[in-house]
Length: 139
Image (cartoon, rainbow, N blue to C red):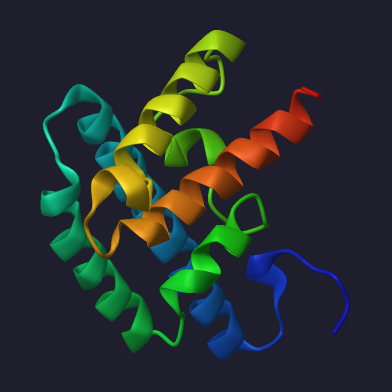
């Protein structure tokens, strides 16, 4: 198939499926960003996060996506925006990004969280940070 815009795709079923995946990715990045902010602010604890991640895992499973694949979707087109995953705007300073990343690492790392299920969000956070790091050319 030639490269075309979504609205120009020849197969209407493929066009609808792609739009559904884009909508799912947008909703997921909003929720991941909200969870990231709430974790840092102390409004959400790793114990509270585990059931939310399990619900997200079940929702994704119903669409044929394994939650372990989500980290690889960050930055792809259509994919998850790494800034939104961290709960930040693109205009965030380098220091804000690094601080958010380290705060999330502390809260989600298995050695400190002690809650099953947080490893999925941890991998997503790491993937988002790595993309930002490459984009901003941090060493």
